[in-house]
Length: 141
Image 1 (tube, helix red, strand yellow):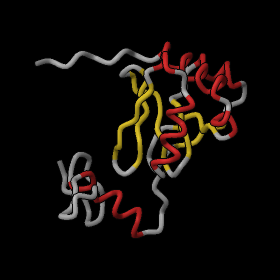
Image 2 (cartoon, one colour):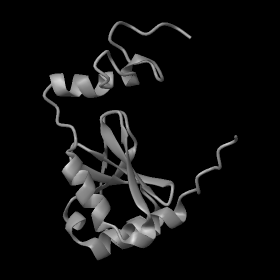
Image 3 (tube, helix red, strand yellow):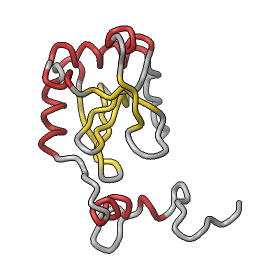
Image 4 (cartoon, helix red, strand yellow):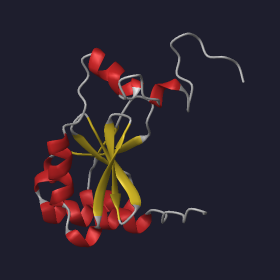
């Protein structure tokens, strides 16, 4: 594999490792460049909007947040914006979804802006999305 040019990201290398302060380098770079990271309060609000039967949880990833429903990864929160993985059922439910990448180089996802405040609507969207996504694989011991 050829070596990357200086400043070019290499998957699985230093961009996601914490520096001496314990902050992942990619998150620190976002802070230094004036880019906004997501607020924990917004993440908590989104997770709280989802019905309890969805078993919603969040995990901090690269300075942003991954969203899970009963262990199934279904979306991310980046820069205080909610992105849901695209599925045919989600597309039919939304009607005409806004699609955008959560970050540079990411595949387009459904950008949920107005629906975040409607707990019923958001919970149904997540329910339909998760039903079409592959179930998480059991980890080997």
